[in-house]
Image (cartoon, rainbow, N blue to C red; front, side, top):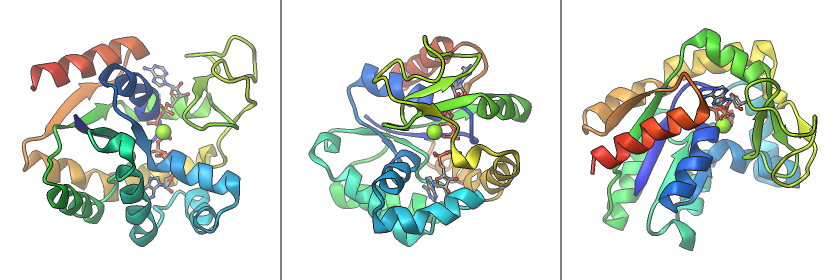
Length: 217
Ligand code: AP5
Ligand code: MG
């Protein structure tokens, strides 16, 4: 399957993607995680991305689209993938359509995680992620690690993301409304959008998403 996950910052895209990708046996591709991995490795791409991320702005398309395409061209993604945080504006959605067309494949669904803004603010404020791998995500009260400050998955150190400060979160939400939300209409026109209410327990949201995907086949 080829799936796109959309939703505001803190909606639970990364959290859900981990479970959905496992259930569906497809790779989880998060452009945010790819940027963070580049930043921690000190690559040129990471250096280009960091200032935009810290400001809550989108990293320019010329950097982002190439990086996403390279990842989608890896052997493990040939049969399908779950995109988290890409596309994030209409020109990225158009570039993705172009790439899929070249490969002779199509998207199966766009899952739109719907969460009220006051909840995403709480989710982001308590989020802690792993230094070794930013796809290992916890929350100080909603999904606390067994040992405070230590990743349950790999034992890495947990920390708060640089872009999770209050001012940057406000900017990221604004960018989401102005630049990312329009892709929902773009995909509605292709009849691909399924809205998933994303309040409730993590596993309940996963069940809703799985039911929507299975129902839509
Ligand atoms: P990115 O890393 O994609 O961040 P984001 O979209 O802002 O989303 P988040 O990762 O903050 O939230 P999430 O929805 O994944 O929530 P999570 O599962 O962690 O992008 C970061 C930056 O990179 C961008 O601002 C931009 O600069 C750049 N970038 C990335 N992609 C780009 C692109 N395509 N183009 C240009 N620039 C790009 O959950 C949040 C918290 O809630 C966690 O603590 C979790 O434990 C908790 N939680 C999750 N589900 C539940 C639940 N059901 N109940 C209670 N708590 C829950
Ligand atoms: Mg995420």
